[in-house]
Amino acid sequence: MKISVKKATLIKRYKRFLADVTLPNGDEITMHCANTGAMTGCATPNDTVWYSTSDNVKRKYPNSWEFSITQQNHWICVNTIRANHLVEEAIAQNLISDFSGHTNLRREVKYGEENSKIDFLLKDKNGVNTYIEVKSATLLEDEKGYFPDAVTTRGQKHLRELISMVESGERAILFFAVLHSGIRSVQPAKHIDPKYTALLEEAYQKGVELIAYGANFQLNGAECTVELRNKIPVNVT
Image (tube, rainbow, N blue to C red; front, side, top):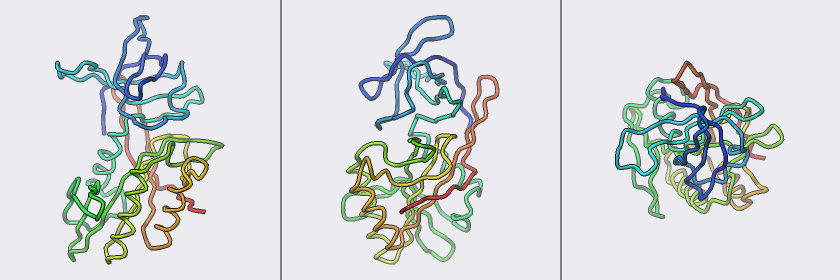
């Protein structure tokens, strides 16, 4: 994935969807932040921000916060909308061996008993379905990656749905798109959401597959290239 970006310095993130930044010329602007999480460690004042600009004249805030570079020189994709795009791109380019052999990909398919939509539904040549739920992981603490960064009742629902798919004989996968260059492994954040952790452990024990891939970030002038290439461990216990 290639994104045209411009540089700024973070002042603060607030009201969940807004961030104030300082441009290189000293001007201050407000931009959109497409991230509903706590963004712990991802929104420190004075971090470098890279943002994109929409040509949609109807947008109140045409600029969108895409990436941060922390003061520890870690790259973070803070725009969680990009996670699904990156996973789909990696599947299409056969960069994820766990998904090789699929013949059909569908997005946002309704399924389950709790009125859910699966991020991706793959079907292989034998007609076997694979349900893939994508989560963006950006929380780094004590050199370890965690998910979630806030209590997530929605995420708990998704785990229940994946468990149901496995119990009905389907293949189900929880896929962590790790969008923080400092994260080398992922584990459930028991200290943040113990219920989610318990459900994740149950899902794993019942056959839900846990897969995590880390992102590579490359900046070339005013264009940032991001790809999911490195498989990293998921530690359940």
